[in-house]
Structures are given as structure tokens and as C-alpha cells.
Length: 152
Length: 114
Image 1: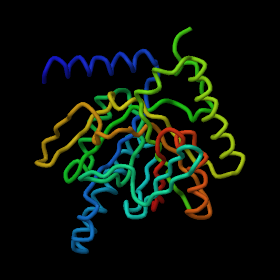
Image 2: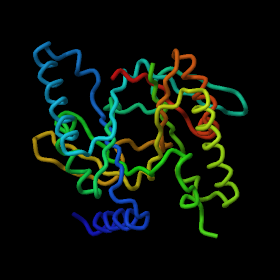
Image 3: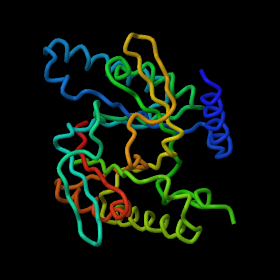
Image 4: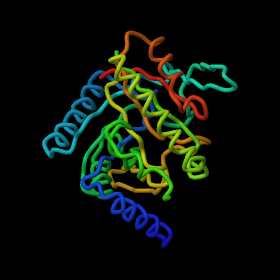
């Protein structure tokens, strides 16, 4: 691993320490080839569903799983923008990439390394990509927003 | 029905705002969240740290490889989300339209199936 990457990792750690929220929530975003699923046989689909269920059971048993969700395919997505007071509604997802966001898990673990370990155990990592993103606490209502602002 | 509103914004813009503008931005989200709660549609929401703090994990050959950075490299980055329980897609779209992020970024709406 290059020095820059190490520095980045150090930055992430210091970010977490500065925020002082331990354990911290992480979002695991599952990017998958959604066109692959219909091509599987019924037996293969049953196999993968079982693998995902086992993964979620392991996270539940470890007490780290806060919530999760599976998204309907990107053909059902709609993207909304407002420009010059006019609403633009477009069919399709925001991003057009090789893999598509298919679902997510929110976990609460002590640090980024623990979050990455759970991502590495995800069945999605075997056939797609799992993005790990640290999350802020709260929902804009229950939190002190001052930490998001520039210092006085 | 549960819908996810995914908020894509240019995260480089936030640090360039003045403190007053940032407070205004936060207040807009607080008001938006309160409106959702009052309407009884709010299920959950979350705000993500900037994409520079992301790690991306693959294990195609069974051996995990970890890269720094987000999966997608786009003009705007996923910055947060809401999950709303509404009657139909039209209702989800009208909440997306009220999202502060729709004014300067994009809000993707997708139904959650489980």
C-alpha cells in the first residue's frame, strides 16, 4: 500500500476520533450487476438468497446490524432535480455505472477496519462491490448541528 | 410503500459556503425532516461523510481487496438518504421535489422491496 493511502487511512481514523462517536455507524452500499439475477437458475437464486440470509444473521448475531434494505431495479428509479424553479423528473438512476446500487446495510462497529471486515464477508463482494461509508449520527433533528459548521 | 430518496450533491460545495449559508442549509434539512415527520412519512434518514472517507471492497476471487474512495466517480456524490413510507410513487416524487438537495443536486427515488 502506498504512503498516500496510508495517510488517507490515518486521516479517516483521526476524523473518527475527532468526531468522537465510537461505535460508529457505517453504510455498506451493495453495487451489483442487476442484469445477472434473472440469468441465474432458480436453484442458484435460492442459493444466493440463503447466502445473504446467513450474512444478515451473522451481523444480527454479532449485534452490529442496524437496518438494511433492498432496492428495486434501476429501471424503476426516478431522478428529481429543480433548476431555475422548474422541476425536472427523469426516469432512471442518478449514476450510470457498470454495477448498480442494489441495497444497503447500516452497521454499528468500533472502527473503519471492522466495517471493512464486514464488507469483505458480504456475498456482494464476491460478485459485485461493497462501498463502505461512515455516517453521521442522527437525522438532523436529534443532533447538535454545530459540528458540521465551520469553526467560529 | 417504502421509498428511498438518495441525495446526490457536489460535496466540494459545502466547505466553500459561509457559516451563515451552512446554517441555512442545515436549517432547510431540519425543516424538511420535520415536515416529513409531521406528515407521518419519515422512517429513517442518514447523512454520509464525504466520499473521500469511503472504502470499496471486492472479493471476486475470494480474497478481499480494499480500495480507498467511493465506487462511483461522478459529478455529484451520494451524501445522504431518507426512507419514506408513502402511498405511491407520485407521493415519493413530490417529497423528493421538496428535498433541499433537489435544488442544487439530484434526488434519486427508488422503491425498497424488503
